[in-house]
Image (tube, rainbow, N blue to C red; front, side, top):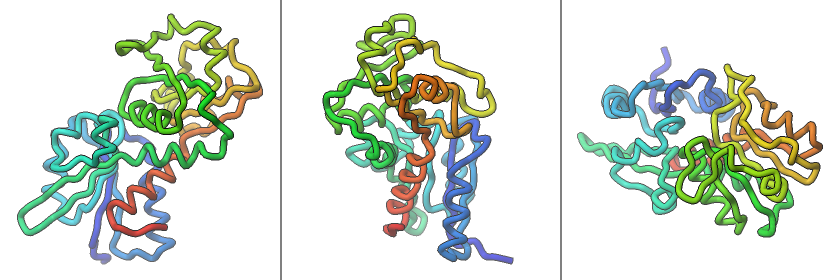
Amino acid sequence: MQLIQRTFGLIGYPLGHSFSAGHFARKFEVEKLVGYQYLNFEIPSVELLVSIINQNSELAGLNVTIPYKQSVLPYLDFIDPEAKTIGAVNTVKIIRSGEQIALHGYNTDVTGFLRSISVWPLNSGIRALVFGTGGSSLAIRYALAQLGIQFRVVSRNPEPGGLSYDNLTDSLASESRLWINCTPVGMHPDVSGLLPLPWQALTANHYLYDLVYNPCVTGFLLKGLGAGAETMNGRQMLVEQAEESWRIWTGQTG
């Protein structure tokens, strides 16, 4: 029987299909990391984080997904300055010293997004629309600011300065050539979901980026393809952010 030496995992609710679990299982196999495992911890409340850590003494790191990227913050002993500025964490490093346990929070979504989107010839003159206001949206907005790209945030319940879907005009949608879906709309199993957007404003000069990766072509991306736009799902972003998480947990790259 294989002795488990180090465990990593993912907290969220619901989890369903997990990219991270498959990614790290393959990584452990390819790199011959015996005694390593990655588990999904589907918890209905972020308060259960404490019991998960206490019950799994070999747990060394966690990824954090919907809906806990913001609510996990009060449980952390240290928050990386970039993650603190963003206001969301998706990676937790668990540091154990005898009876003492310290939780350090980071945000690798920014790195994942910037690396994945670098294949597009975007410049600071392009404008963007960001759909959704959750933890992923906060990271994407931070990344866009890093690129010098102006953006507007669109959601069902607008933040101050934001727009509702009803207020998004054809003109603004047409002028904003980068559209980024940070909502779970269209994600498996409800693949028929579609944001109420002015799709008629899409052109072949648009770029559509969907953080959803299952299915690989969402309704959001299908609309873009139909208009001849460039499209990308969130899979490569997940690969990049997972590898950045690994570097944070272990100090190793690759």
